[in-house]
Image (cartoon, rainbow, N blue to C red):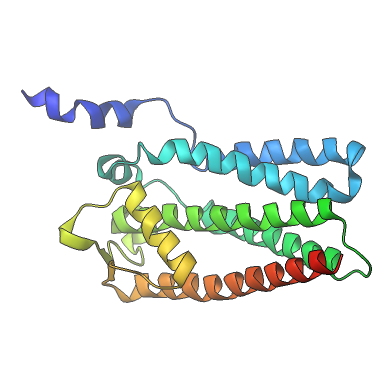
Length: 230
C-alpha cells in the first residue's frame, strides 16, 4: 500500500511547526523577560539570568524538535533560507563570551567570590556550550541536504560533503552527534568529510571548539582554586 510507508514522513512534513529559528526567537523573548524581571530582584545577575533562560528555553524546544528531524523532513526543508543562522550564532557566541568574562571577573575580583555569581556564570558557560554546538548541528544539516538551486544564482557553496558510516542517510541526531564530536574533541570521529567547503566549516568549528574548551578548563581551575581558598 503506497500510503503506509510514507504516512509518517508526510505527517511530519505537513504538521504545524514553528518558523525557521522560531525556537531561538522564543528563547530570546523569554530571556529578555527574565532579564528585566531580574533587574528588579537581583540586578548584578540580570544579564547572566537572561542568557541562561534564553539557552535553556532554546535547548528544551530544539530537543523536542530533533526527534522529528528525519532525513525526509531535513531534505524537504533544507532549501529554506538559513541566512540569519550566522547572526544568531554570533549573538550566542557574544553572550557566552560576556558570561565567561563575568565569571573570571567574579573569581578574580579580590576576596572570596560570591558562590551565586560563580554558579550563575558556570551555568551560562555550560548551557552556552550546548547551544553553540546544537546550532552548529542544524547548520551542518542545512548545508548537507540543501540544493545548489537554493542559493541566489544557484551557486551554493557546497551540497553534501559528509559521508556517514555504512552509507547511512543522516537524520537530526546524526548531525548532533557529528557536531558534539567536534565540540568535545575537535575531531570528526567516524564521519568522513568529503568536500573542501565542508572542511572549511569543520575547521572553523574545530578551532573555535579548541579555544572555547580551553577557556572552560581555565574557568574550572579558577573555580576550584577560588572555592578551595574560600
